[in-house]
Length: 286
Image (cartoon, rainbow, N blue to C red; front, side, top):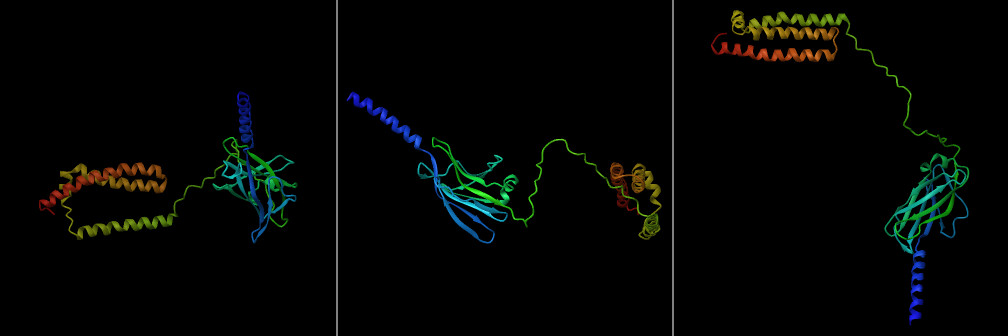
């Protein structure tokens, strides 16, 4: 009994190690199909042990569709990583294309010609396509060449042009060309509108008198509120001068502060002046 116990224990450990070593990723039900814009192509089956013997031809207007079922120790399962990798054996360059995998392990990837890097799209030698499956855990990953892709460029299509990638560094100096400052309108037009504005002054005075304005109260108004009426009138004149300077030579940044100052003075003094006028009206003086 003691001999049997010492013999069984190593066998159990050996069997457990063999089972762990046998756990690995695999796939089955794998097909590759070249699809054109007008119609899908013929499906070709492949497996881990029987890759395709002839290269798959890919042109500028076609795409390659790969379908398979990923399995972990013979059971359908979604791996953490699933790729179809195209490898150029002459240059050593390769490009991975991730597969869309379901929970049951069904995986698919559609590789368009336009998705290929320029270095692989212009390769003259067939590209080796490998299926890569791996995940967390003790199961061994899979990296298996399954078929080759032969690139056939259409001579009538636009040639592929290499675009230099953007890299951070010293760049060429950029010279800005600023537009010239806007010029004043012709003097004839300016004079016409200036005269039109001045012509309204007599009309304003006549309308003021026609509506019953009492010029005799001017002395009374200046006596009761000399500062308010004086500042109000002076600020109006100053605003007209500011607008003239803006028309003649000033820019907007010179105009805005002056308008803000004189506009505030006009508002405050005007309120005081209107208060004085209201007092006379309430007293019955017109």
